[in-house]
Amino acid sequence: MMERKKANTLEELLKDCPQNLAVLKMFTKTWTVVNDPLYERVACKISGGSDSDVMLDVIWRCDRESKVTYVWFDTGLEYQATKDHLAYMEAQYGIRIQRERAVLPIPLSVKKYGTPFINKRVSDYLERLQRHGFQWEDEPYEQLVKDYPNCQTALKWWCNTAKSEQFCIAHHKGLKEFLIRERPPVQFSCKCCEYAKKKVGDRVMNEGNFNLDIIGVRKAEGGPRATAYKSCFDRRSENWQEDRTGWDTYRPLFWLTNEDKQQYVKAYQITHSACYTRYHLKRTGCAGCPLGRDIQAELEAIREFEPKFYAACMHTFGDAYELTARYRQFKNNFSNEGDRCDN
Image (cartoon, rainbow, N blue to C red; front, side, top):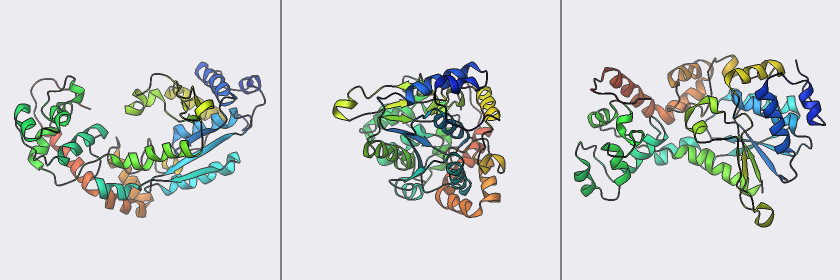
């Protein structure tokens, strides 16, 4: 096991690290970024997930002056296992993880605005359609745009007339036919993420006068978060020293593959939360979110190990879980001519 200690120099840090080129490059870049005197105030956003565990260890080892502030967002719908893991990490690393409450907790956001469904993009388009009183009509775009003139982008998605199929409902096999058949009374929205994480993150960065934001995105994990970025670093704070606005963003794990990550975990004996070691979840993400890739397996684990949390998830997302299950069954039985890209 590699000793958990801070290094005084980069050479000392690299001397005992795994002989893995990606890890060596990550440590070199992270040491340079974190110890850059330009960054007087640094925030590292912790989730309690497995990537986050590795990121915390990397940042802690590189943070020579202990200037990094660790932050965790309490969305209002969290595993007890994650909360317990935060306390464990604080004790292991001798740090304090700052807990930040949601601007609007997820259960209240879902009650007020609606529930996510399929993914964030689909949820957004459905919310736009519902906002204009859409009745799930199967009519040409030219007709619908007359009835709903202020909803053109969402109507192009619904009618499959957008320039890219990625922005057409046909991207999801049978979804249009399913919605026409079901005419779901459920209100759709993806604002729960906005009010529980994005707005909280912006508030933390602004109120804390941070000029570097460190987040645990890995390109190899896939999904919208990973594909949204092209590199590990974004510079946005050129004028920070003059006007104290904006911040740079650094993603230390961005180039690590799954194999690189596992080698790091083994070398430094990183301990993950009970979500992984006891519940055997593949990933955590937003706890109980109906957009999760393996939401059914996740719900079964929650019901077994955290029954009170399971009740909260069902109260918040029950309609979305049921609708998602019906859509997946419908999709499996849906016969569709031609090739369509489905995810």
